[in-house]
Image (cartoon, rainbow over all chains, first blue to last red; front, side, top):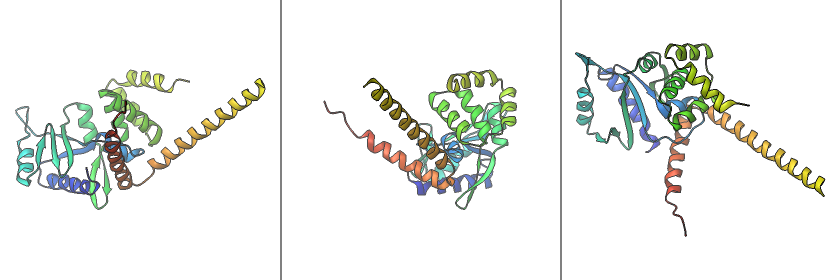
Length: 174
Length: 59
């Protein structure tokens, strides 16, 4: 992965949005977390998007057509833009959809991109709950400015409050 | 003698605490860097990880 190429990835995202291929999207995962915390290693860029659907069938064909026209290859479940593996994840859960809809706009150099709010990131990581997700929750809780009111509302709405309490008891017991 | 050793242990403990605190401060300072700077560091870390993974165990 080369850092110079990340700007190109973000430009392509904007282009996709302009062309209507990617209507609602937001950067999630490690890269989104890094926006709010200290830098750490991450292997790919995760992008949540609300997919177009026809008769409840998710349509991914426009995506692949767009990328193959540009000559980008796929590797496993990734689309490789330059040397950067990108994972387009359909936001199928209500929590993810809401996170995408409430994403904030930020600027990376001269490119505008959408990024998921830290409160939603915590809820999503809490839902997935792999060891690397737990690490990110800790980083977000300790290093970013969290709107507690918003966080608790999200956790309550998606039945994650109990899990969050147990998580805090485990990692922050004194 | 025992007192001296206890005092030394306490001093070491204090020193360790000081190091941990300064590390935490450093992490918080890093979190305040601009996004493009943080991504740059993240890529450099990934390169470093790749390099370190090349090391092989010597029997």
